[in-house]
Length: 433
Ligand code: ADP
Ligand code: ZN
Image: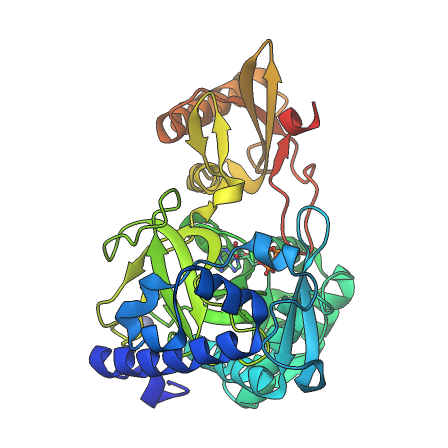
C-alpha cells in the first residue's frame, strides 16, 4: 500500500516541475524572512528572481552545521516565534546543540511523511507500534510517534530504556511494529530471548530502524534474531527528523520524500555535484518548510542516489545505504576507515556477535586500530587455539576490506556496553592527547 500515491508515484518530469516551483517559493521565503540567508545571497549577487527552476539551485550557497551553531538558537528561522509551535534539538558533539523550530504546518508535513514510511513497512490502522526511540529534544521519539498517529495506528510511546518493561508491554499489548535504533533493537532482541515469554506469544513482525548507520549484515542479524522484517528509516533534525526517507517492501534503497526535501549529492571536498549513482555527500533543500527552511544543507552523510523506478511502484529517488558521516571517518595511517566497514565484516561471521568497538590510538607516532568484538556464546571457549583461529580469520577479512592491519581483541559475550539510543562505536584516544 502507498500512503500518498500522487506524490510517491509522480512522473519524474512532473516531480522536477513541482520541486522547482516549491524551491522558488522557499527561496523567496528565506530571502524575505531570514537575514543570514538574505545577506549570503546578496554577497553572491543573487536575488530571488535568479532562481527560476531546479537547475538554478547550484547558484545558491550551501548551509552547514556550523551556520546552525553560529546562528544558535533561532537565527535561521524564517517564521516569527509566534508561529513556532515546537522545537527539537540534536545532541551536537561539541558545545551547543542545533535547534530546529516547527510551525503547525511543518508538524503536519512531518506526520505525513512519517505515515508514508510506516505504510511502506506494512503497518496498518489496526496495528500497535511500540516507539522505543528516546522522547524529548531528540526527534526520534516524537517523529515516529506522529507518523504512526497520522497513519491511524496505535502508538505505544515507550521511549528508550527500562528494557524489561519494554518486553513486557511488547508482549502484553501485541506490538506488530517496533521503532528504535538498530543498536537498541539488538539489545531488545537479547532481552526478548531471555524473557519468560515464548516468541510465539509476540506479534512483532516489522522493525523501523534508523538514526544511525547500519549495514545489510546488521539487517540480517536483526531479522533473524527478532523474527521480523527490518526496514530503514532516515532523517535528521535540521531537515525535519525521521521520515525524510524510508525503505519499501523490496528493501532496495531508501525512498526519499523528495516533494518536501530536495536531495543532491556533491563531492564533499569540492562541493561540485556528482553524477547520479555516484557516492558523495548528501545535501538537502527543504522546499515546503516554514519554521526553519534550509537551502542546500550539507548533511555530512555519505551515500548515493538512484533514480530508476522501484518495483513497489514508487518513482521517488532512492538513497543507498549511508556509509557513515564524513565526521565518523577515521584516518588511520592515512587510510580512510568507516565503522560500517568493520560492521559488515563482523556480521558475515557466525562466530561473532554484532557488538563491537573501535579503539584508535597513536603509539610512537604510529596510528593503531584495535577492534574489540564479542564472540558468540556458542563459539566462546577457554581453548586458546580455537580463539586464535577465529581471530586470525577476522584479522584477515578486516585487513582485506580496510586495507590496514587491525589488532583484533575477541571479548566475552555481553561484555561490550549496550546502547539504548545511538551506539558509540569509536573511541579515538588520539583526540584526548
Ligand atoms: P545528531 O546529529 O545529534 O546525531 P540527529 O538525530 O539529527 O542528530 O541525527 C541525524 C543523523 O543520524 C543523520 O545525519 C545521519 O548521520 C544519522 N542517521 C539517521 N538515520 C539514519 C539511517 N537510517 N541510516 C544511517 N544514518 C542515519
Ligand atoms: Zn520501493
